[in-house]
Amino acid sequence: MKIGARVLKTGIAIVLTLLIVRWLNFEPGLIAAIAAVFALQPNIHRSVKRFWEQFQGNIVGAIAAVIMVLLFGNSIVVIGLTTILVLALLQVFKLQSVSTLAVVTMIAILDAPSLESSDSLVGFLITAGERMALVMTGVVSSLIVNLVFLPPKYESRLYHNTLNVTGDISKWIRLEINSLTDYNIVKKDIKGLQERLKKVETMYSYYKEERNYFKKVDFSLLRKKILYNRLVSTTRLSFDLLKKLNRFQNDYNHLDEELQYRIKVEIDMLMSHHEQILMKYTERVGPEDDYQYTTHSEEHFEQTLVEMFAKLFNETNTHIEPRHFENILSIIASIHEYADSLKSLDRLTTSYFKFHAESNELRIDDETMDL
Image (cartoon, rainbow, N blue to C red; front, side, top):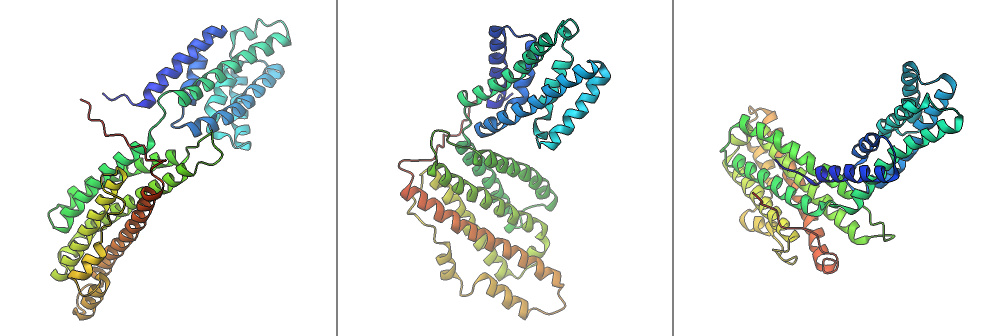
């Protein structure tokens, strides 16, 4: 069983909320605890942004509840109608993302047992204000927990998850180009890789939203975001290459031996280059150590990959299915996209570690292997 930071922070937020509620003598604490669970966000920026949105949404829910009680009472039918009204208003104000808590606030006010015993308008408004305060207590507690406890280490998590996904993609690509795989087995594993890659991209989107609230502009963080954006997008291109190799496996296996060997060499060099760049992130390889795969290719081959393909296309008999050449050309296009992205990633990585890393190093911890 694995307990992540999000699980721990949820528990801490609930404890903190209940302590505050008891200290302020608010009842029932269950409402505040529920609000704390719904309000917890994956990063600090979303917590700050969501706090303001939830405040606005709760105001809408509270005002609608107060008006409906004053006009029609707090019967079950009125609660249902008020829910519809609140949800419609939230759509108008573009606050649909906080509709859950707004409805919780509304129901907490409409269903308060003390409403029926309130002798005056002031007593009713005090009760409504207390219920609103209960919900906001949970929201504030979640914000405090995200700011203080277990801040997410997205740089380290992004690196290690990308490293693992890239390693698995490279493993399957090497098996594909050596014709050592079964189509259906690889296709099944590709689905798993796709889900993992989506999680990496989601993690990057959280990292991209991070802000430094103590500086006007944090250029160091901006540079890191650009670096990780290219790292994730390059991993996506390597995955796209794997999908094409698997999809057009039959065309590749029946390709001319010379061109097939050339494709194999090109891809193997690109993956070696990718692995070297990943080592630069942890400074196990120096930024000045460049992988000259282009030079190696020129030394071994007289023609470029595209020229070899064009020559084969012109020399081959016309009875061969045209789709065969289209599929091979699609693989070559993916190889070139992958190569261009690697060159860009290498330039960015080299530049960062040469000029910026001394004062703003990447925060990459060693991967934990706890049993």
